[in-house]
Every structure is written in C-alpha cells, then in structure tokens.
Amino acid sequence: MKHLSTLSTNAPSEVMTRTARPVPVVVMSVCDAFLTDVQCAAERAGLGEVRRIDIHDCDEISVIGKSIVVLDPDVLDDPVSGASDLLDRPSNRVVLFGKGSGLIINRHAIRRVVDRDMGLDVLAMALRSVVADADKVDKACIPKLSARERQALHLYGRGFTLKEIAQRLGISDKSVETYKGRACRKLGLNGRAEVLSYIEPFLTPAAM
Image (cartoon, rainbow, N blue to C red):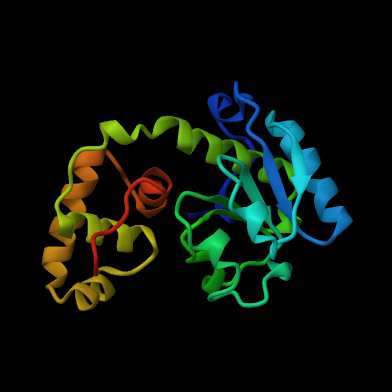
C-alpha cells in the first residue's frame, strides 16, 4: 500500500497516460461532495462508470469484481475489523480517500491512501496507479516462492519490520532478510511499497 503524501503530481508521462480500459469505480461515502470529488478524479484518470454503494450492503460488495473502491474512512464503524467483506479480501482494490490511521491502512484490500486535502489530481494519479499495478501482474508469470519467502515478503509488504517478522515467524532477523531478499530478487521488486502493490492480490502468505 502506498501513501501518496510524498508523491509529486509531476509524474512521468507514462503514469499520467489514460488507461485503455474503462475500469469502473465504486464510492463508499454518505457525503455528496465526496462522491463528486471521486467522479471528477475518475474522469481525469480515464476510468469508467462511478457509482455509490452502502458499505453495509454485503450483496453489492460481493459483486464488486474488478472495480476500484474509493472509501471514505468516516463510514467505517471499526477500522480494525469493520467491513471485513470489503477490506479483508485481498482481491479487492481499495483506495482510502481521507485521513487513514495505521489501523485501517494495514487491512488487506487497501492499495493507496490519499489525504483529501492533497487534491483531485493526486487521487486521479492513485486511481491510475492501482489500475497499472493490476495490468502488470500476470499471476502465471510469478516465480515460485518457498513458504518462508512468501511469509517474509507478505509481512514486509504489510509494513512489519525485519525484527517483527522474525519474532512472528520464530526465526532470526538475518534469516528474514535472506528470505525477503531472495523473494524480491525473484520478482524483481525494490522497496516495501513496490512489494505490496505487486504481490496483492496474487501472493497469499502460507499459513502462519
């Protein structure tokens, strides 16, 4: 998951290019101004239809498919366990548009976090980058990783430190670095944000 507070809107031209496919966008917010902002950003990003659904509507959430969800954190009752059908399903693609605490941004489906005061150009860039992430991942082309490599990479991408991963897996810090480094080399990844945006939703950790 990438937080875009450090990104410039002067992105390379290939990032700013409109996507060729009209990916639909789902908005989860009770605020009409929020919906309008997302509609404007989605248009700038060259995405498809924008529609609003209720975060508590499990039937609608179950058929989101390949839509990108733009979530207003204010509609979450519980950032840790609320909206589990949406936020704990790795195949979902969610952009958090607002002030997100660490409790929310570590949920499996969160791909980007954009503060509302950063503007619609940054939100549009985030939407495009989520589409680009999905386009570049071909599940069949992901090299085979060992169970430890998958575990280490998954936890690293979710924001855990090497020491925390070592404690969680019951191995040494050095072993974690070895497994994580080996997995990154196999996948051609550099940096935590790139790890998360590349592996989700295709890399599921082995049982921990």
